[in-house]
Image 1 (cartoon, rainbow, N blue to C red):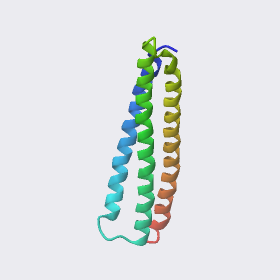
Image 2 (cartoon, one colour):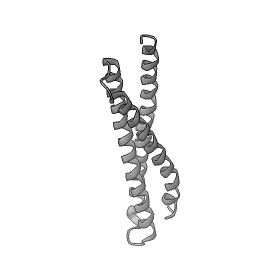
Image 3 (cartoon, rainbow, N blue to C red):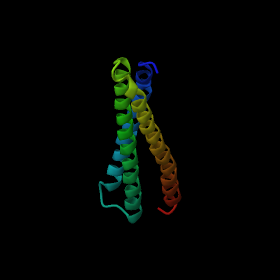
Length: 126
């Protein structure tokens, strides 16, 4: 493996981190607006679901940060002759963290649609 390959992946991971962080900020604002005043049982249930969503985004973000660090480490170790032997396992571990972050983001997206459907269905009852 060439040493620069894992480092070329970093801009893509950076875009995912930026997107995930933006989603976390938006979701946190939504939860805040739901809980700013005394809320109904339905609003409380939706806020609880959104807080769980926030946990998923936090896990995804953490996995992306770890993957980034492992990719950089793999690239650095790939340059050093003595440590070149462990560069590939570190790259594979980074890829594992990257894919786990993608799984968290997919679960987040699917659950977000369900929460919106609940809000839409309940909107006619208000």
